[in-house]
Image 1 (cartoon, rainbow, N blue to C red):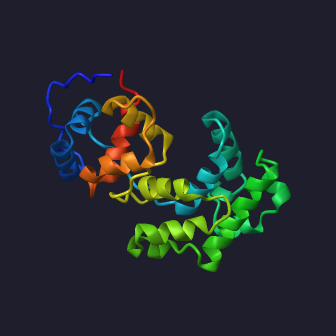
Image 2 (cartoon, helix red, strand yellow):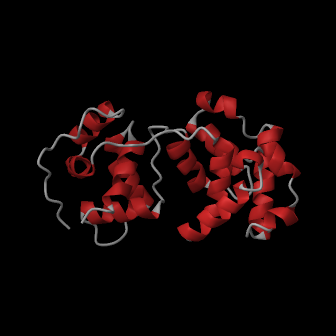
Length: 214
């Protein structure tokens, strides 16, 4: 499917990712055209790391509507709608299940809370840890796999060099705009993504947004 060129080939430069935008536009003409249509990248960090990971666990394999309803009931269990590792750890599995959580996800949330308390996840160290170190820490939690860890790197920490090559949305966007007849394999996406380094995260964000383009 052809993507008609925008009125200007250069993405706006008044956003916080101007350097990345210039770099990616020059490195990949297809991506540059997509960026021109989508507009400035609006990624912003999410500082409530524990709550963000709770949301990630709750939303797994659920529709957006159902996940939002359960998450809203979950945070309503806690003062100020702010669950903490300590308060979740003290919450019984039975009470967690009253908000609509499966037994498995309730147990996952308890293990996440324990991980923040026993040092597997150390929020104050995240800024100094490498991507691989953070992924290793997160996947030690039951219910968190590599994809969830990569989403945390992108949307919570805004690490710039993350390419979730197994993500279905990324694969669909690459297939659509780069002319593949079938969904490309992860190795193909990594090959294409070599031109995006060190701004794979920004490229991924634009590819996700490009799925909304007609």
